Image 1 (tube, rainbow, N blue to C red):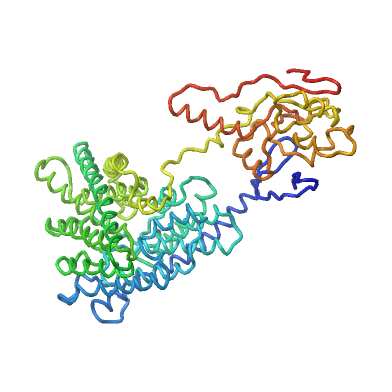
Image 2 (cartoon, rainbow, N blue to C red; image 1 turned 120 degrees about the horizontal axis):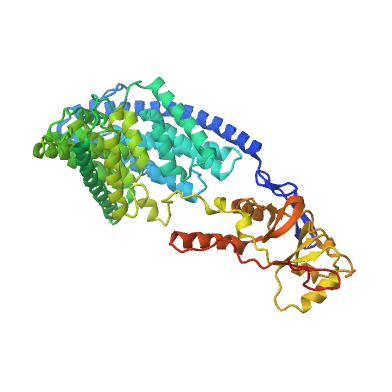
Length: 622
């Protein structure tokens, strides 16, 4: 327990789960931290089990809605809306679905609108990872209605949003920190993705690249365990094979890699264009003179019209992806999926209905990749390019360019198809798409929406400078030490002659062992006996840090103890210097100067310590 001075009272301040004070330096609580990680991991596993069951229930709901909407039967048997025999009546089915979703958003929760990941990111960045519990059941139901009535979306977005809502809800019930709630949100979201696709490694990287914005054991372990649990749920509740099976692809040669790199660059340009068009369409909806509740019905009308002429654009369309990877689709169908799927999906998404973006992006990217691959094969028959490989890298490159989830895109393509030989082609294509996206687009399809609301998303994962710099490197060795032999009257007399005085003073004994900190204002309060030693003004055991402690530990301790300055001590509590907020800011300034190419030393100018002893002023320079 640490005490801080407040007026004449000593107020205890608890700093549990924060750095605590031992004899010479801050000591972290590794045992306590590890126990918390274990507990959070167990909770994450339980959430993953629950979301695996919910993901199965979601697919049942989609199947039920599809059968009722397009075939007039109560059944949860998988069915594709592309095989319907409704004729022109099919145009009205998505309209009804959009109307129902709009009503659910109006009277249930507006948060069900959209594809899930941006909404989860926004809650993480602005609302301490708190998502309304109602989203846990409203999102899957609304998405099942939207997709089951022909909406051109994937099931992965809704289940990611649902898993995030479940993790957040559990995190709000438990007494945990905001960061731990963020971990549970990410664990639930990515466990849902893993349960749908059986892709645990890609789901882990999705959490890192789009949700957690960090890479640490405390977050990685729970999320990884949740994703593995979600994958186990996939193998138990769904088919144990690959989600997108295809024939084995051969290792590409150098000429083929060059061609795939060109395809990646082209897909990157397409991803940028698609992202900008989606939000341009959304801006158009914002200008409509009708309530937003009606927008999903308008989007549904477009979905129905497109679906009437191109039935393959209706619904999830995972079978379209499998057919593309097998190379069985004609150029006409590929062109239809590339253009008409985009028209249907982009307008429906911009209208604010509920559904995912991953499956549509994969479909559009795969079709575009296959089309470009066909052209390359026609022009350069000996290039070594194949249609299935072109479709695969088109899928991954589209996701990498649109979302900039670079590693996720590559790993996802391999995990869902089992095509490990495609790794070099995936790497070169996704790098090209990522490069184009980075150069030409400030925000991504995942971040543009929340960026417009003023939410800034992290775009890099550089290590925290506070964790890299120690107190030794920035401490100020120039300061004034009061001797324990000084009394209040002597210090008052000396302060009266000093034009500039710091707001604090360190107190040490004759062996320079640190005793505590006294604020300047404390000397001028009313004291019945001004001859009392200055040690009487020290309130409790003052906080201090060791020379090798990081600035992050220093900041945490400053916050916990409401301290403006921290003494730096070495062996036997020997006072060696001070760390202030100015010292910490100088570390940031010097680090920025280094990144700009300037040469600068991180050490602060050192001039030696001064000691005020009884009857003398500013002596014993060192």
